[in-house]
Image (cartoon, rainbow, N blue to C red; front, side):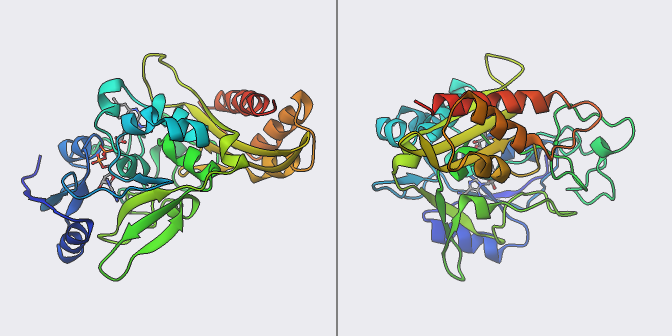
Length: 320
Ligand SMILES: Cc1cc2nc3c(=O)[nH]c(=O)nc-3n(C[C@H](O)[C@H](O)[C@H](O)COP(=O)(O)OP(=O)(O)OC[C@H]3O[C@@H](n4cnc5c(N)ncnc54)[C@H](O)[C@@H]3O)c2cc1C
């Protein structure tokens, strides 16, 4: 690991300023993702800015970026008003990781793509001309089935699809001024030489996540499929939220994780459901619509039927 200096910030503002002023500093929350990247020399900063001592945001509908996944999973108000968020946090990683890993870090974590995480291989995100999973003979069983024209990484976060389905926002801190973004706006398609998946500017930090309870958020869920039952990253995840008026769907939000470089909002499925009764037939039609545009790679076509099944199961769970 390359040597770096270490600064423990006492506020988000101080951390953001230090990051903005520095040549190539990085921010650390719990470090469960960052430490691996430092050890593998994927990230080689001169300075690491530790966030863990700063004051946490709080209030109704506010989740601190420094809340741990265990905090989120244990919060009964979150379980009641935002079941998708509760479930996505409760099944992420291991109990030990959940006790440290933070919400902000979960949203900003990096892809698990083997090629990205091994400096010996080329990687589009790390500046190479090619993305090996897209090349003949490339290993791509865990990679994307959507939006993989130049980079086939799969987005690893459990919380991101859930928060997008819930219409959550993030409040960000930067010396040039704070801003609020929807979690959906937080992400952008991969760009050559940029390893992160967010629109955050140099030094910009997520301070908190903001949610508004509604009939839609209360009728939400999160399901995932993984290889190991004990713990694993999802092969496919689905977050869904449905507002019913009588027996008809008035509004639906369906977001898939681990199938594209950033969380994938299945708008065709949402449209297919809106105005219809929610039953086995319409849930199946929505699942078919969601995956109609999928373009599996040589080894990951299995993700398509799994995604359809998860969508159908999630919608049936929300139908009663
Ligand atoms: C064994 C294992 C299993 C896992 N399984 C899962 C899983 O099933 N599902 C899942 O979703 N995740 C999983 N993870 C990933 C884990 O949830 C994330 O590593 C964790 O949430 C990151 O939080 P952190 O506080 O450790 O972030 P860090 O490692 O400190 O930071 C991660 C990234 O986010 C940036 N960052 C951190 N906080 C902020 C902020 N407030 N504003 C802006 N940028 C910030 C950092 O600079 C860094 O780039 C797993 C991790 C491990 C080690």
